[in-house]
Image (cartoon, rainbow, N blue to C red):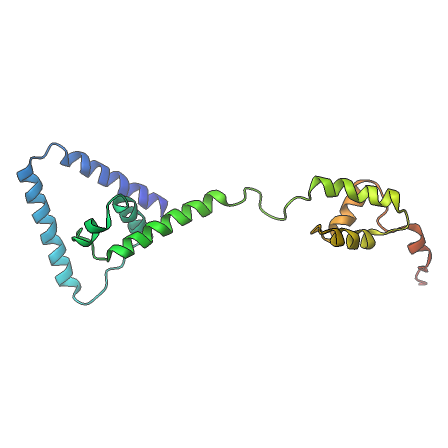
Length: 175
């Protein structure tokens, strides 16, 4: 779609360059010719609606967005209502904003540095706490962190996520 939009933009730019040296008489002749083409197309389509590609919509919205509302309603030679062109322009701007504001790093967001420092400190001050209890305390404090994240932070710090007294109650499975 982007390639089609660039192609149409370039062809229209060259058409604009061709129109610059034209006289008023030649401009009027071209306008009448284009209006005749529009009438012929409307006659052939009959009651069918004209379907615009997304690249057509983007081009028309970009081309006509500088005009004022009276210009649209005076008949700009389009097969659509002025509000439709303005909606296309709003969609074009919204898509542009959405693509720019999209996160460059896909996936899960990184854990906040202060939480990465707080978790080992909580274990150091409370050696009997396991990762689940630390996770619960972080939730009480308002930190949105998963229990598995607390486990990973402790593993990365070289600390056993489960305290020794929790493991003492477990018996090995007899095979």
